[in-house]
Amino acid sequence: MTDLPRKHLFDLPDGVIYLDGNSLGPLPRGAAERAGEVITRQWGQELIRAWNSAGWMELPRRVGDRIAPLIGAAPGTIATGDTLSIKVYQALASALKMRPDRRVILSDSGNFPSDLYMAQGLISTIGKDHELRLPTPEEVIDAITDEVAVVMLTHVDYRSGRIHDMAAITRAAHAAGAVMIWDLAHSAGAVPVDIAGSGAEFAVGCTYKYLNGGPGAPAFIYARPDIVLDVEPALAGWLGHEAPFEMDPAYRPAMSTERLRVGTPPVVQLAILDAALDAWEGIDMADLRAASIALSERFIAEVEGRCPDLTLASPRDPERRGSQVSFAFDHGYAAMRALIDRGVIGDFRAPNLMRFGFTPLYLDEGDVVAAVDILEDILTSGVYREPAYQTKSRVT
Ligand SMILES: *Cc1c(COP(=O)(O)O)cnc(C)c1O
Image (tube, rainbow, N blue to C red; front, side, top):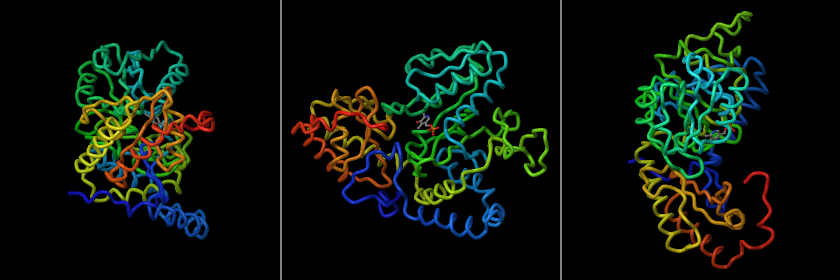
């Protein structure tokens, strides 16, 4: 059994129960020192020599190889850098080029807005008669027809935590001749994923949520190794070139997953992420998943037993739910603000969802019960009705 939780590996402020690691993971111990070393010793002393002497150029690949086992990918199949939105665009553009005779991008109406915006933006840029189809998540498998060029879905729904059946949907996409892209933003580090076993062509994800890489941490993109040399990068940056320092005016993609790199890597953020991934050493994702389910089941039971105004908005079956739980409540925004003021940090998603993330790396059942004690108190006292809790902040 993996030893969980590992609270000693994180710098969490006193008096805080952090139920938002699904949105921004906390600061891992050692990450600030690592960033300091990169800034003062490598950048400060080595200057431009550090690209070679400190291994900055290899860092994106090295970090990708550390993410790989968490999503069931082989070494060398993941490129890191940019943001998730950019990686979605890259995967989508490459996938459309693989199916030039087809016109439909299929996603679902519950997908994260940025993924949908990227698809809309790509369609308007290429100016062809492409179409984005958005059936409900439940209807998506039946909407996979032979008109579909690419199926692009987020595996775990950011609002409800509902999990798509990766194996079944990927099989259906391939049976219809479509390319499959999975967005693992709420899966990587949250649930076991077997991306290689699924056979999907592409996967993308971010590292500032469950992987704790910090605000602005680089995203990742996986390409199935047997197709990667046929992938034509739409964002053909110089660091995806086979030989960037030949300064060749003609683009020639790298003969590896490195072709999915674009420009200069975010070295300080990659170093922080590298340090953050230390907390994942020796983790068996099946053990982590069992601990996550125990926490979320306990939370649901406590809330339903003590807070009758809240309605479960996530799947009740834990096998169909990721590592987060949402409850609907008409005064959800105000109640979440009051909760945060009392040290229990979750977040709010419009129109009425109070969202709570369960991260077994640094949470135990005692934290869950203590959080519900405070939630119950806020609801029974009605303190959330105070005017100060009613106005929306820029980030909710
Ligand atoms: C968090 C998230 C994003 C955010 O993309 P960024 O470019 O990193 O801001 C995109 N898609 C999904 C599904 C997400 O959960």
